[in-house]
Length: 341
Image (tube, rainbow, N blue to C red; front, side):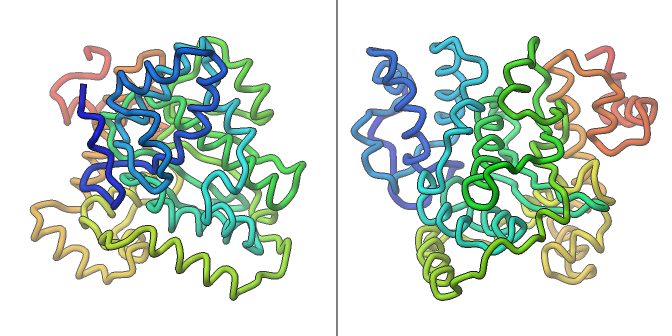
């Protein structure tokens, strides 16, 4: 067991999440007496450590606790069910900033920009696709698996944020999940009440562009400026530039299967020139092509290990034309066709 004294208050060098995010889960566990403290202790955490909302919990422990809590409570849809009870105040100033935004697009842009104040090693962003807008969320470390509960909780909570702050009757067009479909998706369907797609390249909320850009209120720019300053202070001295390869992989994760991944598009997202991006990647011994291949291979192996996902579905999630192209690509990566793994 890891030492329970290892929780820290300032941004850690490892992927971590604010202790306050665990509060709703602890509340659910407390409904079954005797479960909470044992489960937390098994993962090296004491209840008293969660009293500081600005402390950090290693992301791996958070994900593992969430998955195990669903098993302990015998509730496969625990995360989704908790998410629909989410309130803006549950994520502090970020939630208040979300609620103060004039449009849903601006709200999600801000959520993506400041999510590192709550948790690290997370990819999040908006892209437009014809008359739709997609908000993507995923934990970057593929070794943190399974993480079904976190994904379902985050997407359900994000939908509830929109309902709380903009329109109580709002629904997205679709919900996408990176994990495979459960044996019986009926409970999830009842919670989300929109088409659910599984084995995708990321967790996504698909929305109507006209709705995302509709103005719901006039912003108080003084209030939003104060909130953004406070959230920036919470982020502290974290290097926003970060590792270039990680930043490129984050954009790949948002684009994959939904938007062409070109050196120009990536450079524009990172606000640097094409030549600079190519040069810096070359200095690090890689290229955009190599990073796209790495991302696709890691995601494909994850989907195949999970089982139950057809090659055609994996090919679509990875942005390939069909399963034959995926089959050839996978064999070139590993020396074996996917059916032999």
